Amino acid sequence: MNDPRALEQLRQERETFDHAKVEVARWWRLRLVMGYAGITALFGVAVVSGIIVLNPSRDPTGVVTLAATTLLVDILSLSVNIFKLVLQQGSATRLKPVTIVRPDPR
Image (cartoon, rainbow, N blue to C red; front, side, top):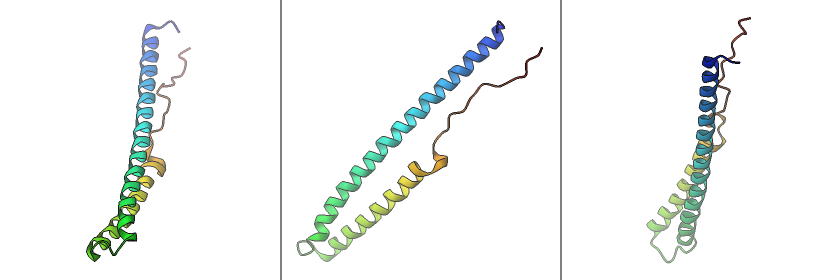
């Protein structure tokens, strides 16, 4: 493989693949951070709502109902978002070869 054009094409294809690999790693890290942030937010809302729901005599009925509704909606929305972003097969970018295979001109 002494053809300068072929060498340059191979270099560009390697660079493209390396760039795609870095991008996939960044998206994975972002998903991981967002997952931890979602779980932390769910835990915080669950604690506050749980305190309000488990001590209904301390707060008005409307506040207790709102806390219970907030807890339910938060759990459901987190479950749906985890399914959409993390568990769905099509959401992750797949790495694939970028080299174009051409038949040998011999």
